[in-house]
Image 1 (cartoon, one colour):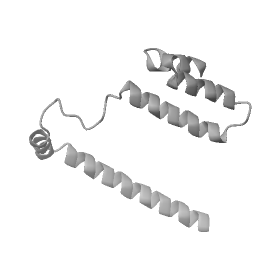
Image 2 (image 1 turned 135 degrees about the vertical axis):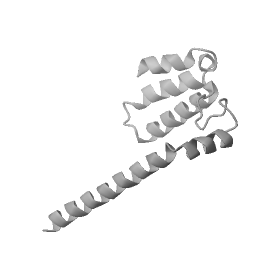
Image 3 (image 1 turned 90 degrees about the vertical axis):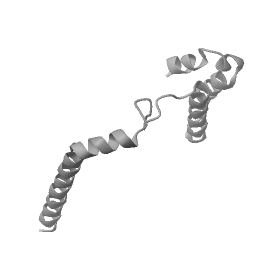
Length: 106
């Protein structure tokens, strides 16, 4: 009986969420919303999503992930992670193509 009540509650919540989503979509598809978006956004060059990531920030993120994985890695995997970190931080890692070598290792 508890499972039945939980299931009915989940179904009710899901139905309410679907109604809310449908209402949201209808509001966003409304002509007034389109006019508001056109006046709010400065132009087609503006974007709400970052579409570019610099190579150095990508390298730094990868290095951070490798270092955190190394802390929890088993002893036999650490040399592989060390090699990947070295590839990212070494001379060759700073030039073009250094990150490509790391991707090939995976």
